[in-house]
Amino acid sequence: MGTGTELGRVRGLGSAKEGAHHWWRQRVTAGTNLLLMLWFIVSVARLPAYAHADVTRWVASPWVAIPLVLLIVSVFTHFRLGLQVVIEDYQHDARRIAALILLNVFTIGAGATAIFAILRIALTGTPK
Image (tube, rainbow, N blue to C red; front, top):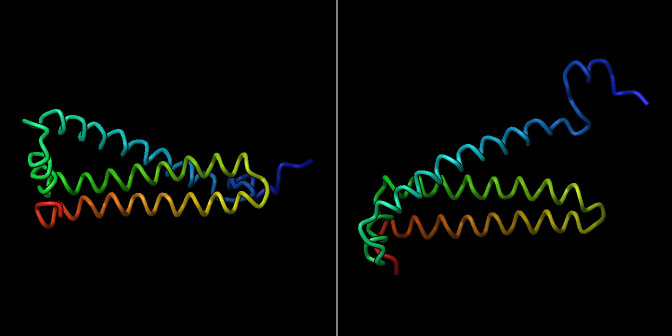
């Protein structure tokens, strides 16, 4: 068996031609997760108190709400990319499509819910 065409070997393209892009996106989201999680842990540790009013006031700040939204986007993107690889590697029948659809619905729904909660607090100042 051959290893593909000469042009394909030179370009380094596999059969799907998207493996490097997926791999690169996982590494980028892992790096952003690391930085944003460090910011989050330090920020939460520096709060004077953990009462509901204090945390709500903290999240209402644009200097906190924007990085929190970026953290949610980065974490859920990384989560989806990682589980997509697991599903594609271990599911080889019709359940694969259903699992990928459910994965996308779950990550978009959970991420949108978290972003909505952050923006609601940030834009109104208090949760309802």
